[in-house]
Length: 170
Image 1 (cartoon, rainbow, N blue to C red):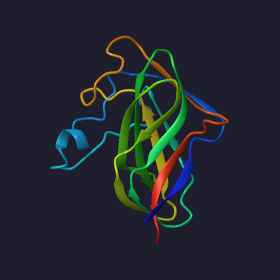
Image 2: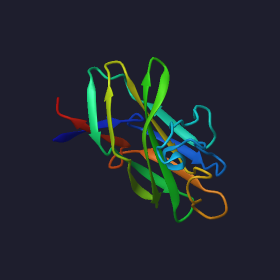
Image 3: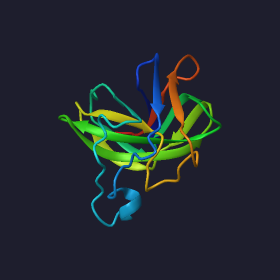
Image 4: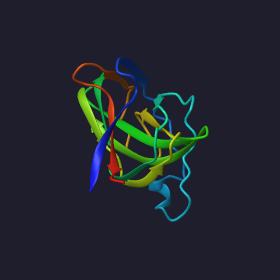
């Protein structure tokens, strides 16, 4: 049986503005484009326009995950709706490794994105990287179909940004 653990990232009080780059892409070797029949390789995203990233503190002990993580955060949009893509990576010795992702069509308020189920292990010292984006060109439908979009992610009282991790009992 699994239990949830909360990873609060980014820090409690913050605001991140995503000016969506509709040309941003995770590449042509993703879980969606390979059908998992060949190696899945996501392009590194540090410094990519239109994304925000946060790293957790290093894990104090080994953690095993089995299930579907969720991301919840306060959101403001400059239009009626948008897509929110969330990626989780394990960061070990400075190198990031893709773990899972999720996407949801969102409105202003508190957004929840359920990520694809994953079975993995974090070792003591590993961190978790959370990346949020508003588009993945070539893989997902553009939301909105035309024009710009700005997504503001906010952590505030009643809408703290959290990732719920599906920790397995030892």
